[in-house]
Length: 391
Image 1 (cartoon, rainbow, N blue to C red):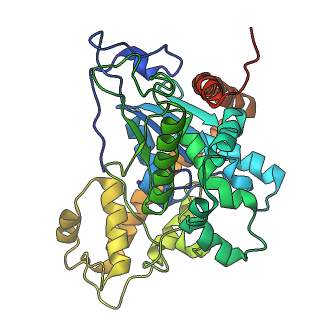
Image 2 (image 1 turned 90 degrees about the vertical axis):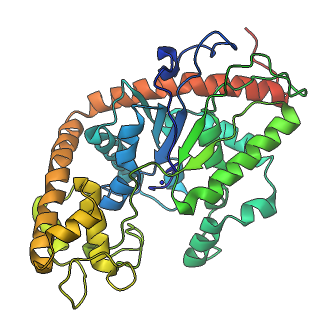
């Protein structure tokens, strides 16, 4: 899950039933009654900045659009994760809408995907508490991202929310597990076995793999203790994902928290500043446009960006710019980047001009996600032993 802005390939079933693409559809068919549903995918991104950046787009978000064609897709703006550090409420509200508008402008289709805001589906927090009670303190302490962030902020400044957010991330994922409750509690015996279990995919970067492993561990622990309830998710990197580095420090990942403003290209930037950043991107003292990660990290990063946006192979680009130097290459890349992001920027601003319409799209997505989340939590509450509210 790109719960943080974040990325093997996945199989899809083109013959999947139309009901599989509808998150509000009823239970999947029993064995022999129809094809296996399309794989489900869940991914999220934090609204912690006023714009996504080039690294987010090529590393994850562009693939969200492609995955709509092959998967039963759930995408969320994870605003609960954004409050693990001190924040401004007005900025959070604005950035949540900006994040959603950018996803729509990039091509996430609310008629083919379930797009929603995490906090509008309260079952996320409820399942996080249940899973917290299954998580050992030492287990949570081993999460490297918490250790890294706590080291930067200081242990006294790190919140309990930052410590437990991988468990909330696990809840984000497992709420949308296909077929919760497909076995009798305590027996592991399937009550409606199908021709094949619906796959459950979570696109992640390398820095998130540990969190997906925690999610799998917690799913397995719950299943063992209370009966098979969750499908254990599979972490994978979608085809076409590209790791983009800082334009001024090409040995480091492009990141809002670590990069300088000149090292990041924002999706919503004006074309002029974009062009300047690319023309000023760090290269080396040579002139040969050639991919060499070790000796020409800057040029290699620019080649990777061009290849990802244009669809041309790196080898083709090396041949095209042989003997031309960096100037023409950077100029062409700048035009390619601005040509990609300017329409997204314009569509985003248009969506933000009508907040009521945008909020209605998100409310519709939250309602669809809520139906799935409610079914999951009905099973979880029953199996944990909570008393139902009655009818």
